[in-house]
Image 1 (cartoon, rainbow, N blue to C red):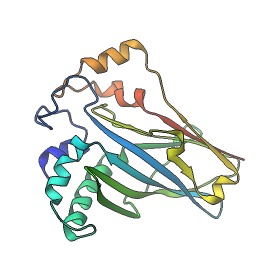
Image 2: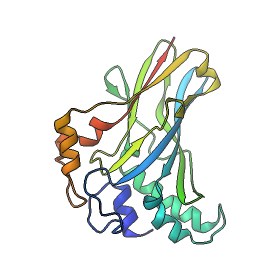
Image 3: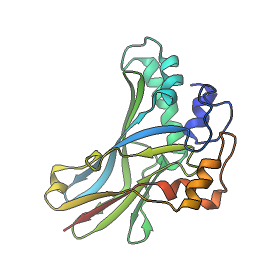
Length: 215
């Protein structure tokens, strides 16, 4: 995988990334999310994720894949490299219960990378380090790039789904935040070579929050 894509998946703001896309303002790349909340025996066990990258973000991957057949060693190698970068960023995801972070397993259960038209799609199953009881519990989670170089969002509330078991006892909601004007103006002021202060958590302020409430 190219160094440019590596920097993207690590959400580093570098001017050499995708030189054809020169517009100012964060974000510069976009990933559409879909998540299925997986359960077994009354416990939440994993998040099954699907990340569809925009065409410009996908360009490096599709170029490297060339005409390789789906599931070929070329695609598997690209998937492994992208997944390693995602793991290095803690899956760009936080999962919370009662004000405490829920830890994820060190490696995904399964992952893959594929072409969908002119876009690349990364899929993986992210297991919780320890299964969490669903009954009577409330959980929240969010997937975001802390620097907001990459926008990661659900296009519709229905893009978060539940296992059949959870569907009988749980409700899920997606909340899209409305950062104040000062935060929005700051994001608009950032060029590709700029990065917000780490303690600002800029991406988190724009991150959609998913709430899972079970009876």
